[in-house]
Amino acid sequence: MANVPWPRAAVVQALRERLLVDGAVTEGFTGLDVRPALAGGPPHPDSTREHEHVVVLLRWRQDPHLYAIAVPLMPGPAGPPPPGVHPASSVHSLQSWAEEVVISLAEDLDTGLVHLARRTQVGDATFLSSPGAAEAAPPEGYYLSPVYLGSGGGDGAHLADVGLDVSTARRLLTGGHLLTWLHAYVNNARGEPYVGHAVVARPPTDGRGRSSGAARLESIEVVPGTPGTVAAALAYHAVREAVEAGAQSVSSALDDPVARTALEEVGFRRGNSGAEVSVTWREARRPDVHRG
Image (cartoon, rainbow, N blue to C red; front, side):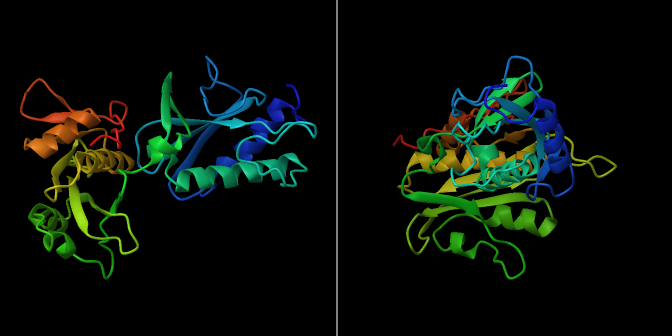
């Protein structure tokens, strides 16, 4: 193992001891295993060739998918630091290197790695690797985020004020069936005006209270004149929020022109019944935020 000062087995063990405990990295991270490698080698297109890797297997929030991240190994003193380790960092032991890995993983996950990453399927695991800036960008001039509904939060009046229909979201919220409510707004110092929203209902539950079936995308709506990229981004991020909350898939019966175009771009497909379209996270496509 060229330029790496510790045996690979020791590296794997050190990371297992640090990552496979509750709260090891950040809220929502559950470490499952650290492996020397997976069959076929880790696809990690944004890493440099001089770094070998070990593989961290994880779950994210309530997301049912198995994810994997390739972690570059620390080289010897003559080599450059791997991605995620600052050149001035004083990594002097295997334990201090493991702490650097934790810091790097926390930063990546807290800034949206799971939903922004390039995804490559290897066996049962979906490898995550950092996207380029263009892939990570929201629609130019706009921003998306969840509607704040906690203590002191509102009921979407700010969206109703610009002519958007919030009745479905309010009904789901009152009944305890709202999974996520996203809004889109102009990306400026004021964070307004608001220009659109998307509403997702929780999947139905079985007799034991466990989710069964698909979450439902009940609404995608934008203010007239808003670029189609915003509606498509709302659809994509609504799917991401639903999956991270535990949904296996997302379905929708929306058929108005704005929603239909957005759903098609994200990868929703019509099933055998013909009444609804649906998509899983593996099938979901990140929309082109640069189109008109």
